Image (tube, rainbow, N blue to C red; front, side, top):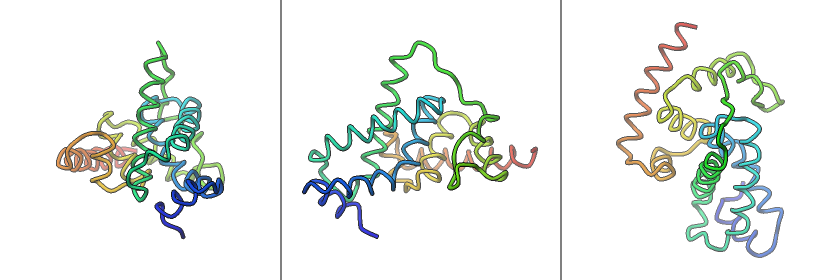
Length: 172
């Protein structure tokens, strides 16, 4: 598997397939960030496309090519916030709608659907850190940078989220 830095280098050299590999690698994480902010699955897909387009156009401005993932998550976050500003009223993604979110085969299995539904019941700050950390496969340090929070704050929010998830899942 090629590193992000290599793929960025190749994409900047004109190999569009390299950017396609980066997009595939981070699409689910970017969608998770967008869903978490806008709470609308359809809008999240549009936001992801917009974020990927912005990333492609701004690829030459990326200072540390190895940090493409966190950089894309920041772009996605800003795109989602811009979307919310443009919308006077957004449709919410309810926990019972979790089964519409695709997995590998386009469907979530029962356990994953229950887990996602539980995550969607968390408070927004906790939901954000959980989705970025586990769904987006970011390090705690990357989550802190993406959300512009301290590492300690993110760690505390993850700890609280784990406790709440445990309560939610044991009730279910």
